[in-house]
Length: 259
Image 1 (cartoon, rainbow, N blue to C red):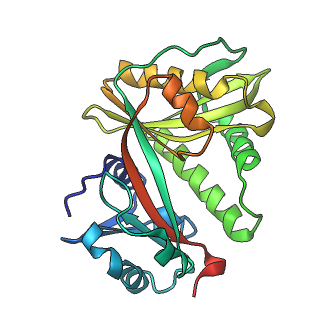
Image 2 (image 1 turned 90 degrees about the horizontal axis):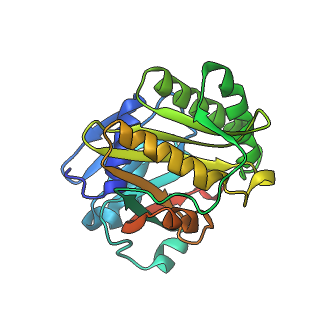
């Protein structure tokens, strides 16, 4: 399958680096992450728009034991079908904004924080930050997902396939994000997060700029970030010089709604 979406191309890069199994078919891809079965977007199918009507059945055939449903739709312009039809099936349609930048503007205001890459001693703080930012309902599955995802991110950093950054206030990590480079000029941001009690202080803006400058110093020519178009974060990215390039469509159904 020839993937057109910049967002999915970089998503697939991350999955390959993380050791996911990707099976390529002419009209779709199957992505499996055995190390984290609770990671919906590590266990999904990516289909061409013409395959979308058949995608739920395809997912069920490829993941017969899965309680969730996750379907990516390749393309650059956003959804190609009405939401209502999918919502009647209990399937949520999410359309995210894909933004890119070839250079960044400096944040509007300075911050009182230490910005740096994480060391081996910082990962416990990264885990506490992730849990503080997580808005999912507490469950054994979600706890296992978060633990496996953090372990994956640390492993990628230790292997040199990613870099994780933190903003530290009085020695405590209050914002964080990761950056992956493809070696051909693309850099993709992941998990931009700020502790709820430290938002609106400019930490995320400063850290996105700091990490972007680092990526460019290591050969990145295009920075890629994906955001919810309704979220506050997209305003931050635009203020730094990111512009909308594409839209990414995802269809998903949570385990409690499955069946």
